[in-house]
Amino acid sequence: MGLYVLGAFIAVTWIFVIYKVITCPEVKDTQQRGVTNKYVDFILDNIIQDSITVQLYKPMEDGARMYVKLGAVVHCKVQIEVIEKYTRSAKLKLTFDKYAHEDIFFLPFSSSPESIEIKTRRKIETIVNKTFIDDNRTEDIKQMYEEKRKIMFNLPIKNEQTR
Image 1: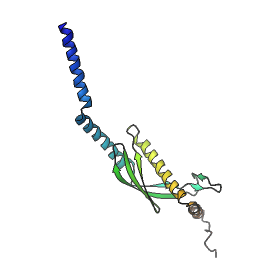
Image 2: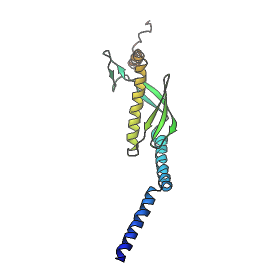
Image 3: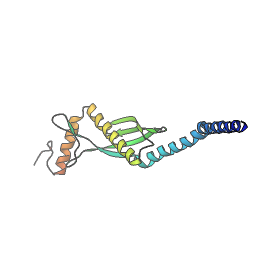
């Protein structure tokens, strides 16, 4: 009987010790906070650039938008500034054309840096195009595409006078 009591006491003691190690806030928080902060810093410093260029979707006559792969393409330069860093995300300020937009970008620990870069680029491209559309800049974008096409193929621009 004495060995059973001693064995039970040892088992309960080990369970208590393991529970304390697992739930100890000082150890767990410091290690986790250090790793996640380093990961967010790594992604923001090495993967997400200070500025990128995104394509403006070409407006069609029926109101649809088209992603152009060949031919004249209009790009918009976007400046990216880190406003705040969080545990698994960052608040970024996007500055482009005459607009400034702040949004939170999720940087999942389980995703690869390449995957995060692709998702971030897509989100920025969506924000930029949506901002242009919401501001009724469709005609401006059409004109930019027309100018780019004329320059690309050395054609006279509509507003220019021919000799």
